[in-house]
Image 1 (cartoon, helix red, strand yellow):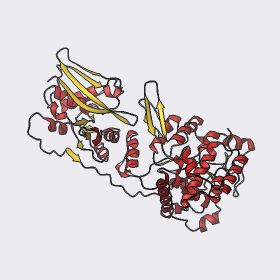
Image 2: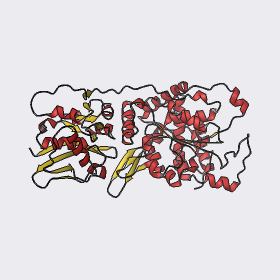
Image 3: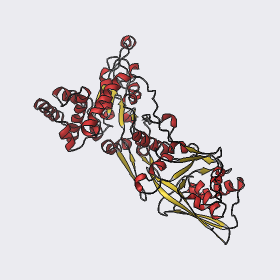
Image 4: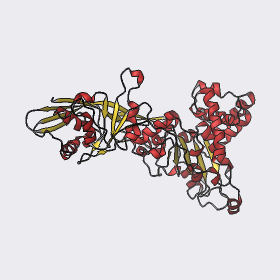
Length: 512
């Protein structure tokens, strides 16, 4: 048989689209042509596949005209994931394998020159993209290299086979009806999505800072974002590094989404399965590094922090374009990357924890050290943060520096476990009431879930008028007040809840 079909998948954003690898052998001048909108690394598969087949003792049809088509032709293909299906297609088209046995299988894997299989990006995204039981047809089986198969097997109900060498796969599809012997390099993996307890740093390590800890508790309970401002060494980074421990355990769906994005970015590790990610990009990071991009589009830090924490230290030092790119994701929870020929959408529902100094020297308002900055320097420094960006950050809190005797003699504070219990209870109340976190409330849901009594409404109106708040600021204050009410188990939002929420939006006046 001179024509064979092998199924695989190509990644485009979070989507893993089906790809049919068509291989045709014909008489004529010997050649190896690969078509189907393939990137450079895919075209290089010709040399890897040729060497892998020859070095494993199999016959490469070098005297034939070989044409490989990756269909559909208008879908971009990248990386070395098509090495394995191309090699199998050539062997099947030359009669060395039974192409009928490929039915119900999908293959992906990069080949070394000696035939060993190497891991690929996005194995978990491939597994998630397989049609479910409602599709009517049987769910395809995945054949993947070691290191990628373990990722794909995390998806419940997926049949995954792990192979370490091209020969391990070839033995399973030899012609004939005799079932192949079980080989050491070919193994079916069972779904193992066991959640592990994460070892996060404890919040009790941070001495004092009761106001900042309270703000983090509210942020964790309602899904809100936080901006901490304080002098160098006051504990902002320590607080941010311990925030992930306050969040509830990830559900299986959340863990799969987070792991799939990490797999696309090449950061997935089974040791961190079902643990909240914390991304801390350096302040020299570009807008593309934060929100994603490239060709083909790849996720940035905000997507890699999906269902986790994005910690931006030294916030005013980030490039203005990078910070302004955060506006839409903070509102929508997604980021859409559009290019001339491609468009990809990545989820970006993250907790933003930002930290900054109050001025260039860092000691404006400090009781321990005098500030040496002029008013113009302070204004320019704080003016690096635009009003629209600050308007989207729910909680602004000052982190004061502790004196030496306070730092040494203050006993350990409340532990992460104790605070986390209140956070989990508040989140459960919100989910039972409205099916989402308070931060995700939009439109009419804000009016119905954040109703105020007369005294609370009057207080909020007065505060909004005096502070010149936008409509977004008012809505975000209402959602924070709703979270504060949930933390104490209150059915309605009362004056005390609104008053506390108001004080979290008065730390910094930004230039527009």
